[in-house]
Length: 595
Image (cartoon, rainbow, N blue to C red; front, top):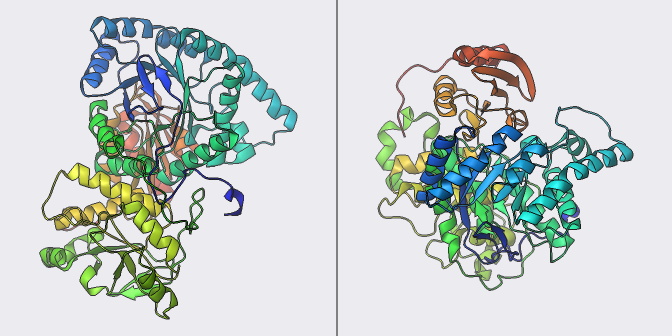
């Protein structure tokens, strides 16, 4: 904890308080400053196709999207924002438009003339990104920062004069070589990259901007946002800029929703976040209900009085699993470095007992009623004292029915309980009697359990919010997978479709899943274009990236190894590549049971 001993990203880890920010205006929509948490998305049409873009913007606005982003790869694309904006307004729609800019300063200048907000990525705006390993002298470093200033100042001045907003949005996958070689591939590098741009903006008394720190790995994303907020607090009270939240390349289906809920939901639960975008590899319209559902619990949540004054048992800025002692229950080792185990109730176990042998990786492992788990109120001094002074190691959990929020309740338990006792996490302290909306159940469970797992807390999990045995087991395993805690199936990093995408992401991702879904522990990135592709694959084993229309480049780690493969051959060639690297196994034959 030494490096971060003086840093705080929220006033109280045990009580909800929404971070107080200045208001940033995007057109007529305010972000931060007491406004509701705003929901945004991004259209997928080609920016040169005015009617398609306008239709998609109107559809998103109708669905409740409050801010709509459009990619502008070059000045030519950016110039057509004039036509899109005019037609959207002519249709009576006032939703603010945002231009998504990566490499091209001239595209940003053009876009700022037509839309209410410009998103720049400090990692590739002027800065170089060639995955080069080199030492930067102080003079060379300063020279590159000077180049950025020269290109960025005209945009700042234009945005200030026209009343435009800006997002300074760092992506873990696209940090520049200069930042990578100075700070490494780290949350600190992401934060420092953004602060460079903010300092330039502030020199010109321009403050109408928000920050983001996106990553496809929820742990990295959470750490980066926490570190950003802590650094802003250190810089001073007038660095109170709003925060845009997003997990980039979350994927599709349940996995994409769970990953988003872990990253976005856990930060919202700590009072961080003023506008959110859920990035799904699906039509953009499907992102809106998920984003609204994630924001909803916090739209009217009141600030809470301070919790007990306890020292955190973990460093919120660098992940490390809590050091519990190993123990064995029902033949399964848990605690210590053992796998985080999946619990169920006796009733649910009985319901699936006849098919447990056929349930593969999704089977229940331990029955709650037979586990000997000790349930306590984490405010109960006597119960804690008995556990902490006893000689035996116990599995401990929070008692049902308490008037505590789940995340603070389990944090309090972890702060007060001797570290040798393993902890059983629950998604809710109010077990559901009947099934409700499964997406709401999924998002709540992922936010609560995923957030705690990313804090390093938890040796076992129990889903109580979903009474259906199969659904609750699948949800348990999918949360463990999305948090990177227990990899039991192929892991996919898939970007959302956007106007830069060079192939049909949805059908391609499904085709790749169908061919590779049995490769346990292999991580495959499916990226529509080169903007975030190679970088967001930082921790992927293999990558499938759009290189040109109809052409695919294949990667091993960050290295491109096959170029310009025709799209119709690319999935087979990906399988060949996985074979070449000794990671391929044939799919098991025989009966499978859907859980």
